[in-house]
Image (cartoon, rainbow, N blue to C red):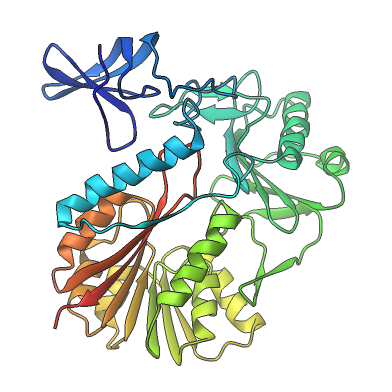
Length: 405
């Protein structure tokens, strides 16, 4: 089968019996043999079994688990070619809302060893990552997307889990690194575990947490209160609060947002742990932030108190419902929703608002373009691509929209 095009996730596209066939880990121009894994009336999904005629752009993936675990999509190409592919993926989506302007791309300083967080699942042979679109876990010894310190921690954690036979109790383990190394064990039920040996192996600059079922993480070893400063804001380092996974691109993205926002009264919807809200409050007269996640809202409240921010109001609840309950007008609305995009109530409230400007941050170009189409009272003015997730099909989009007068 000849690969003639690319899909919305960067996979190769060809045809089998005149039906569109999506094949990951392939490049345009390649002749491949495939194995069909799913077929319906409109398309086929397959995996490559042999690259008969490879593209000149094909590279040897450096990771032994590539195409087995669901961690990466583009190790079979150069990083420059990956960025070009992502540019074309976004441009194709933007054409749906008749946006044909050129846009800037912010590449990552590192194409590997950039992630500050990894979530691992249990496997009889050790911790691992889930295959794409599956609950099957592929055991790994290391991951190229995290740095050496986190990989060394993974080795110690793997040994610890096997030694104490914790696989049957564990749901997942999260390793997160900012000012220090954080390790969070999520157990399916309460179990007595002595973490002293692991704590000694990980070193002084580490913290170990544990939670049982749906309980909040409890600190088992390490310093209780740790702070970090970002964008002039002092914030708590919480293992359970959302934070962008690529520090380099996060800095570029947040600086770009700060340079775009205009006006005195701001709304930050889907506001997370409050870092961006706090930064915006430094240059605005009043900021209202809305966040559904309980851990994130708690972090945002602590951040507000720790930094003595008086012109910020953090509201806890569903964004769409809260927006329809408050009687406020804003100059600018900043939205950073989950992959599914803004919910219908939020879109309706924002579209009917008096805000002159919308700053939209998205990790899913498909839901972003859908929401832009729904925001019929606004015109898309600028778009930028931030490569938050090198070697994967994901990236961040930053867009500005202006009120149609």
